[in-house]
Image (cartoon, rainbow, N blue to C red; front, side):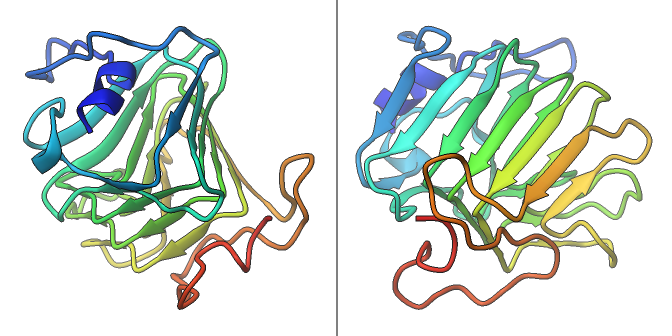
Length: 217
């Protein structure tokens, strides 16, 4: 976890939100972090703070698991947001990750995309993430999107058991109606991968063994 954090979590906080730690070996923009298969959690290393695992600003490139079966698990333990992504000049691609058990009092238990972030989520499993808010404009147990120049493209990913306290849509992806971003969930996969169907909306049953066998491969 410490090596991943050191290469990826570059956000130094803001006037309204502080962090306790910042990575000291941040990847160059356009580079790739190739994660080893396994579980990544704060108990095994450094995180931004006790309520937030990883946070980036104007960092783009690729975060890729060594296996295309979502066997790199970013684990929040039900007590923290997994990744906050703020403004990027180009696209940040998250590929083959399991984003699991993230939790946030407002929105985006797994991912929060703000202020012009450009993100692709490819071949990922988002499972058991939660937003605790009852606010009508903030939610998304899985992903929260806000900002007119913010973009989210989802390819071949599965959403399972994500929740928010407010009854209604957006348990998996919540796009802020007051400051909406551009959200697309494609019924096709990135070039070079076979096409099945990406899923959004009501949680679906997770495949029992291989979480990616029913998406892109």
